[in-house]
Length: 243
Image (cartoon, rainbow, N blue to C red; front, side, top):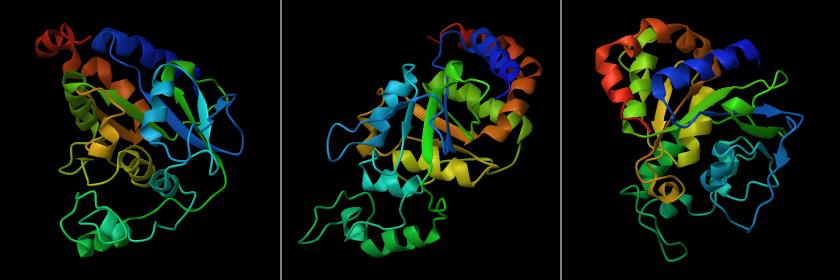
């Protein structure tokens, strides 16, 4: 990680976004990034809930054994299997499984699954750190903001500043971990708004969504900040109400 880039963003983030939460990043590694191994508290736990610790400044790494949510395991590249009756679990349910009712019909779920491009199976660790905790040895691959509406507005507009295409920012259907791990890791030329999944929303504040994109876009975004709408009077009014 280029520490000059890290420090430059920290200064500009404070200048234009006041005390808004810093982003977190993740990367896959054979090592641990000098972070703490995540220890699951139960046989099943929502992956998004655990990331609250990272947002508060604790460096964590996960692996196939410490991610207990089967969905998060798949979306992080640790398995390519799906739970039995998943198409019914995500839709209307059946005699064996209660349905979450996020999709009308099981056939629609099957079509969605077949449309996904998955992260290749691996046995590496996935390291999560908050931006200010990054070191020279880290190699971030995806940047994730957990943002309130005003901050999300700024991020949305800032990303579009250099990527002014119709579908450069999207909000596809998927679990919370899909929107911050699988999608931005695979599709490096798009940003993803997420955390619409009701099952994951209990793990984030009521007025927060996620905004995630490939780290390859970050230098471009930082370079643009001083010449973008962030220096205008319109943004200053919004900045003044960001906490």
